Image 1 (cartoon, one colour):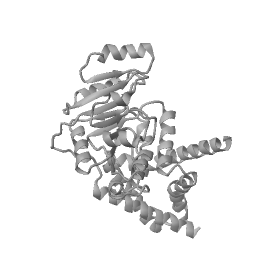
Image 2: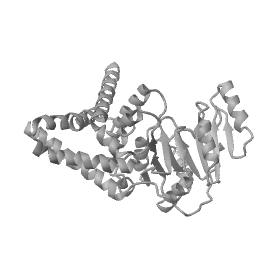
Image 3: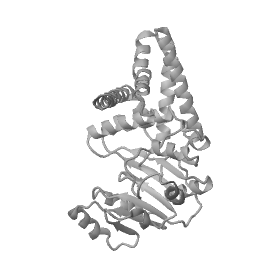
Length: 341
C-alpha cells in the first residue's frame, strides 16, 4: 500500500510539473498585428444547416482573403437550403457530393473547421503568422470551450485537465518525436502544397480523423507542426445530447492516452482511485502536499483554458467521477469490440 501511495504522489508531482511548464510557456494562439494576403480555402462539410452560423461568422472576419467551400450532402431539401442561402455569394462555393473537391480549392492554405467553432477577428491573421514564421505544415488549434448550459461545467474541463497535465504543448513544435503529440480536428490549418504532395487524406474533406493522429502523421513525415490553445481567438461550444458529449469525452481522452487500454486503466487508477486512496489512508498533515499539487494544477489549467478556477476546484470531485465513469465505459466498449473481432 505504501508503494502505491508513493506512486500516486510521484504521478501528482509529474503532472504538476507538466502543468507548470504549460502555464509558464503559455501555449495560446497570440494576436498578430501583421497582415497577410494569402488565400485560405476554408473547408466545411454541410452535414446539417446549423453550419450556417459558422459560415456567417467566417464571412464577418476581418481577414477577407478567403473562399468557403461547402460540400453538399446529396439531400435535396438540405442542399436546396444551401443553394438558396449562398448559391450566389462570391466568397462561398457549393460543391456537389461527388465532385473532385481537391481541384476546386484555390487557396494556398486549407483550413478545416467543425460546425461548433467560432473564430474571432484576428484569428486567421494570427494562424497565418504562426504558419509562415515557423514554416509549419500543420497548425492545430484546440478551441477554448464556451459554456452553454449546466452540464458543461461537469464535462467541459475534463479534456484540458488531462491534456495540460500530460502533454507539454510547446514541445510539439520543438520536438520531432511523435510522443509529444496532441491536437484537435475541430480547427486544422494546412499548407496546401505539403497537403497535396504527401496525400495524407483522400480528397479535400477528410474523414473524422483525430487531431492527435494527424499530428503524429505529420511528424512521421519529418515536417513541422504545432498545437496551440485557442485562447480568446478560437472558441467552440459543445452540442448534442449529454450521452453524446459523455462518450465523446471518453473517446478524446482515450486518444490522448495513445488509444491504449492499459494506459487508460493506469491513468484511471492514478487520477481517480489514487487520490481517494490517499484521502482515506493518510492523516491530514500528510495530505497537504498532494492536495496542494491538485489545487495549484487546477488553478493553472483553468486559467489556460479560460475556465472558472473556483468552479473547477469546487466541482473537482464530481468532475473526476464523471471522468472515471467515461473512461470505464470507453475501456469496456473497446474491450467488447476487440472480443467481437
